[in-house]
Image (cartoon, rainbow, N blue to C red; front, side):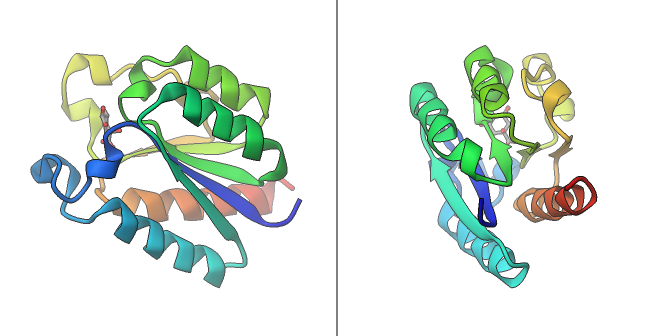
Length: 148
Ligand code: DQA
């Protein structure tokens, strides 16, 4: 199976850096991915990252890569609050995952408090800006060490 970990970013996360920086910070997605790839390598994992603004493309990616990967870090963006289909795609490849959000979704509009992913995730990390990806990575690796 190798030591592959998936990183999925959903809609509008390609706009990081310029998108509502007060909520999402000033780092670009590229900078976040580069940092996480480096940390993955240092810890003996290969990070495969994917960003899409299209629900079906995210589902196809999970189908394609899920079964051959150890785990998943996902920021599904607004699909978090709407997509039963992404939930079902994750379940279909039965991959352990951490749900992350840059902003603290519990501090925001009520519609962001519902997640179709949280109850099937290992855990959720929300509100620490770009650092949620690193925290998510370490949380996932710790889970894998204790559950394999
Ligand atoms: C987000 C929170 C979502 O509610 C929002 O739709 C996003 C980003 C976050 O990272 O804080 O696109 O997932």
